[in-house]
Length: 447
Image (tube, rainbow, N blue to C red; front, side, top):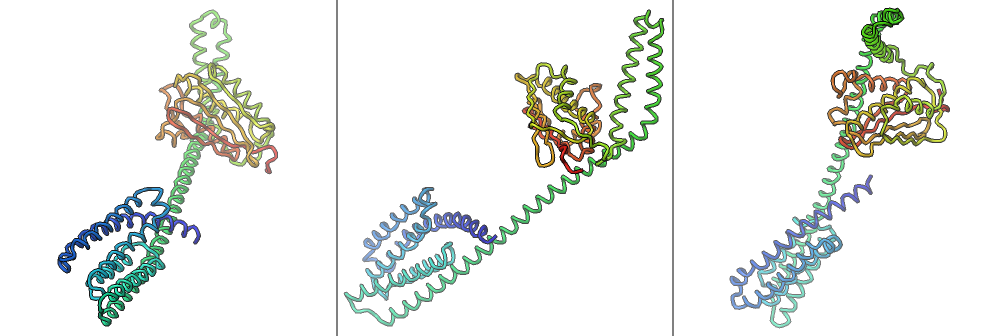
């Protein structure tokens, strides 16, 4: 963890250092030029000489500021450039001390102020702070000694100013140490908060998924309870009605009356539709997750071929590609899984016909993953809107026109796949594609 924090801290510090270095360099330019007023107040007879020094220093600072705004130079040499523009005003002030009164020059306070500003404001390291302090001390001593070589100098003033500079350099270095430590602690705190926020977001996401799964389970259980109560009440009358309709259609009078035969045929078709709905509801009424009776081994490839044949009419004009592994033996209820495939292929075909897309296609793919066979059915149809995506497995939810479907297909398929120990999932990009995926246990899976 510490190396990662260190690398992250260095990356953040680099951006922080660059931003402050740019602002600090610009401020240094303003202060160096603004110091002309001090020159006029203390040494009016040397204003031009001191002013030229300030102009020359400001010109170099402008070049360094330009380098800080050059991405390639700034990213590589920001530390060097920062130390250069910090040291350059110190060199200028030391020269001005040499040029004016040596140890007695009031510009010594400019050296101290620059040290304080660097230590308190600039994000330099402790060693860099010490280096700047030593550099400033040496520059001041050389300036005073150079001035004393041409004229007598006040030793006591030199000693006092030197001691003052040592104090300033010490305080500046101490500030850089505390600031560096505070910055690291602040970054560590931000890093910890960020990690906790990430963990919290992941937890919230997991809870939302669990909540959605539990709601889906509750809906399926409620529908199962409803279906179980309806089966005996509806199924027997339907069977009696179908039996009566079949006997009626065998009557010679019906054969001689096309209108009566058509009416009885319509009635029979309606009752068969009711019977199909009841059959679908049985999936919910009697589903038993993990039921050991559904462990028969069959060839998934064969089941897929059956589903493709049964949906052949709906798939007319649609290119269907199939990609399967060499061995597709799985365990489960083959007829029920054929129904799942029929439902998925039929929905894909409907979406493609609705989209009226050139080059409609359905891609069926299966891959072996561990002890499961992962199956995906993908189409390039209309896609599913985000607000519908979370509801596609809800019983009786449908986007079809009234009378075109009850919305039980996907919910029934969901229950069937769940009964086989898998999960039916959906993903989509509206207007581009939709993909349904589910997994089945392989024939060699431990049961």
